[in-house]
Figure 1 (spheres, rainbow, N blue to C red):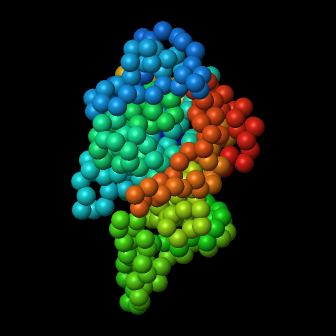
Figure 2 (figure 1 turned 30 degrees about the horizontal axis):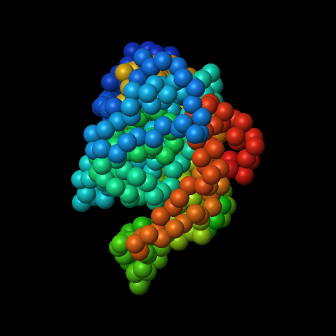
Figure 3 (figure 1 turned 120 degrees about the vertical axis):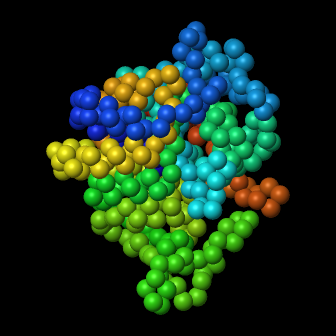
Length: 367
């Protein structure tokens, strides 16, 4: 979901041609050392890797890959960006929030295609220094760097950049482009937004821990998104792509809806109605700049804009893990998702910069 907030920034920068106006907005993006030691070391010597030698980190809380493994990581072709969306509740501290959305973006060595892969938040993983838990717990335990190291363990990918954006930021960007057109593919009932008898907005469900099972609140009518294509305002788009509890395919359905929103947002940002309208353009770049925390791993935002300038909406391929099918196992009363062998092949293809071949061989994995 958050990937094409970055894309929005890229498209706008290209449209402005690197002018002083763009430099003003680049300055508004918060830069931070998110990746830490999980970022690629460009000084590494090239070395071939395969699935048998896929890098796996050792466990200590401060430990990273060995020099030999780091060398393998640094030799991977193409560039990888880790995108994290936070859904902290108003009373929560952002630093303690769990990563609600984790997306790996692989940009080909030629810089002309990008592949987006959403990782299930409930994937059972070994988190360095913290034992075994769900993937989205890594951010709460150790921030972006620990999450990046955890994703590196399960994918074998090294990261060239990272970004964080919260859900409020997504709503701002969608509103800044005047909303988006989305086609709802399954009836989706919101557990977050509803209306009481007086027409006041209020949650229609309670989410009961520890599994956050939804429990209907009497007298509250939930927002329902019916199958079909229509215009979505920012609040609707945000609410729609957050839903997983009451749809048949759960988190996989949510991932699909998120990626569909990414494509719709990219198409809207690149439309003449935005690029040719200075006021609309100003709203978009301001929303992106105010919402984004970015780590270019030694490269500036402008450098990344230049690298990605050849990629447009038609050059995006959206991929699902596990072919969008549940692989759930229960441990100690908790449900976890595990990734299948073909997902491991997907990660191997990403490491070898062959995701185009993977997508052609597995069309049912393409969204």
